[in-house]
Amino acid sequence: MAEAEAAESAGSAELSENFAEDLATRVVVILQKQMDPLIGGAEAADYVYETCYPDHLSYYLDALELLHENTATEKFAGLAWNGLINAAVNDKKLDGLLTNMIEAALKGYYALEKPDVELKDKKFSGYSAVMAMTFIKMVENNASNDDNCAEIYSHLVRQEMEIDAKAQQEEKETGHSSLPSLQKMYDDVIDFLATRSGFKAGSLNQDNPYEFVGVLLEKLRGSRRYVMQDVMNQRALEKKRQLEIELENQLAGAEEVVMAAAPFTEGLGFFVKEKRYNYKFLAVEKIRMTLQLLGSIAGCIYFLLGYMNLWGINWIDGVGLCIIMVIFSRVAGARSRFQYFYPVDVSKELEQNSTQFINVMRHMSKDQLEQFVVRQIKVDRNQNFLSMVPEYVKYLYAIMPDRKNMVITVDELSELVENSEIEVAKQLRGAL
Image (cartoon, rainbow, N blue to C red):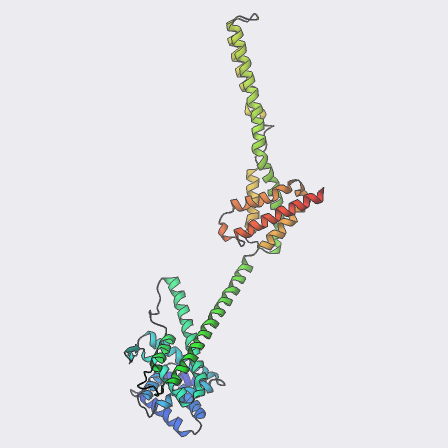
């Protein structure tokens, strides 16, 4: 309730033109009044929360920039942030203040709200410079504050990676990104510190006054590597969980697998019949064509006998008998006369049963399909068609539309077919 009131008062109050200067002055006064810098930093953080949270935190960053402009006040910027990070450990509202402050810095960084800062002929963002200089003052005040610097910097890396991930998703969906193509702010901060830590000694005995900045730099680089790896691991884990959930949703249920047994068994029988269809059809056709050919040959023989007046047959009788035999062979050897001997075409029934099973098969995992095939090999009705079971599985895959949507891969299916051939061989040996 108090947080809501503070946020409402901060959002509704009209800010003066010198609000950032007044804020900087007030922070310095609070820190000077307290003997303990941690207590003073916590009180300063509370004051910033009451006056700036959540919509005016950019003014707080402006106030820090003003503190860095004066050598007499720049140390208070480090004290303020050090007090903030220590107080945020036990105070959720201050933790939210830290998060929103970094969010405001990132927003201003990508919006190019501050002019660039030049350091040793290199240009850096004003927001990166404020953060880097504050880190320097934190460590300059007390070397043990490098952990607090790393904590704040870790927040920056994590939040900027989240923003970048959202921008990439937006670009993937819409074709364009709302995030400008700039160097990451956390890299800009590192570059600023690296530039600041550089030192060219005028003599051999001259010490580097910025050596502590180099130590801080390595500390922050380590934090960056750790946070980036942690974020990537979390994303990979989340992606894995999402894929597992999607796979579970795609996998066929136990009831579907049980119901698919009947179409598979029926389809296997029709597949065997359809496989033998051509052989039986050609065998009947050979007999039919042979009978037609024999009748035609007999007619030709009668024609030749009549033509040569042999066996008392004149040419008129020979021609008549030839025509009669040809017509008789065509009529007697017509396909309609042999309809009973032709095999029945079961392609329609095969397609219906195969389609029913394919709808379940595409959602089966490798283990599900392998166990299903093993059970089918042991079904009594399929014992006469055991050798055709692997062939039928291949046939189902061949006619399956959108094979890319299958849960199992082609390699897994090939391995499954090989295993089914081994199971068929075991079953046949057991039957003997």
